[in-house]
Amino acid sequence: MRGIITVIGKDRVGIIAAVSNILMEANINILDITQTTLQDIFTMIMLVDLTSPTLTFDQLSKKLNDKGEEMGLSIRIQREDIFNAMHKI
Image 1 (spheres, rainbow, N blue to C red):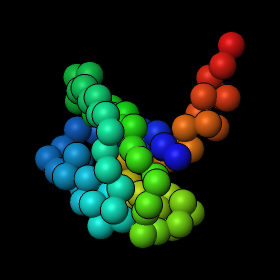
Image 2 (cartoon, helix red, strand yellow):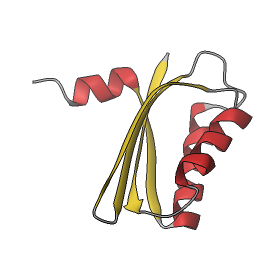
Image 3 (spheres, rainbow, N blue to C red):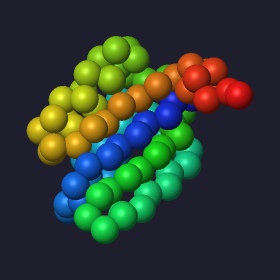
């Protein structure tokens, strides 16, 4: 199973590192990543491998959300199948 992580917020040092560290600790590999900064707004989308995480999906979601609140960002994760179903025309 794969997941989609989105990050949006005011740009600052350490955003990618903070998210990547959570994923590393949970044994989750980053398959693809795109990020950009629009003026001072940071946006990032990650495709991640959820095959053998050390956390449940809900635990991971909470950990990412908590980190987002701590850093003043919106950090969300969705299962790829849910993401695709929501964006199907």
